Image (cartoon, rainbow, N blue to C red; front, side):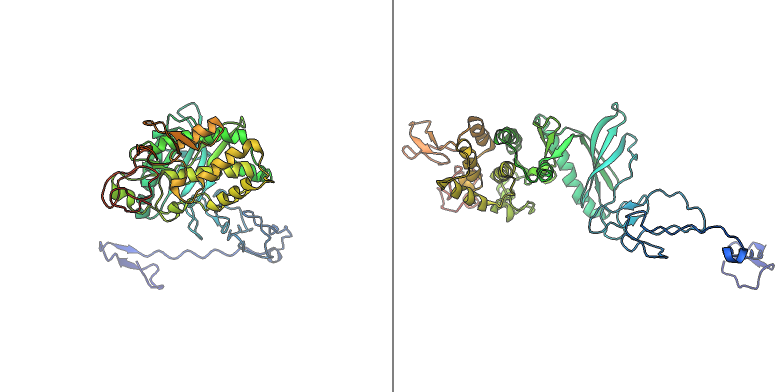
Length: 445
């Protein structure tokens, strides 16, 4: 009730229940604590810290808050309540200290890491933050119901219900893709997918190692040996071939050294982060529709940049990744193919003779025109295993030798390549490598 100041000790009635009661007298205000000079005490005053306890930035004299991260300094007149350490924003452009328990930064809105030791869903205990991104975080944890087995836990965060629903579809699709690839050795196993309210967690096999980009950067961009990279390339081809053989085909869309982990034996690898993978669609209309433009510059071919990726777009990214690993230099798309072509034509070519076939294979698959690349990851693996670049192959009908990626035999017109998706104009099937529909003349790419 709103009461005037002069009714203390008087009887009033509650406006709702009409019950009378006597208004109690106001308690006297507590006296402010006297300063040392007023009380005569000579006790020393607690010193003001010189650096912020949250971000370690220098503090101004008499400051009550850090000017860099916004952390409120605790008063020195009494003991502080035990609230736990501040939750620092992982965004390098922000770094603000947030109160414990917050899920999003109050300043920039980025997801905040969950405190170590937190038990999720009564089973998974978080141990350490591994990676933070715009959509969530990846933690190292243990499965307390499976003998404290090490696991990697992807935590998806989304405050807006509509945005969360969109992200959840991508998150669930990543779990389904990992399950579809469970028979491929270099793909992490998926153990659990949990969706509750506005949170979702993907529990996977924990990979002990570092990604290949971090390793190169830590060693002054020192390249890896070509024979080792060849073996890695063959293993990655198994993943891509399995994805491209699904119905409808799955494409990765973001293959690069950052998404490949080197294990502790310094030889074996694991591919991680299938969050950008998607299917090409079952119908001609779905395949022709523009896709979300997801790519990493230098690793993505032109058709993917404009939103028209296909299976051979992953082969471009594979070639760019192999180039980066054996040279220590980041690729520049099909411009790198031109550079390799010029080097191979140079009499003073710096590429060793024993490895020229490997760089030629990279050059072919970095072609701007999708029809100039290999048609499948299976073909790339075969040439990696043989240590050569196949240039000709015989017609199965008349045995005439034809250049690779030729859609029809030059002598008997027998079809030499697999059929493509139907022509969007006439709906009829052509052969891979055909630039125009043989029925209606429509340009196929």
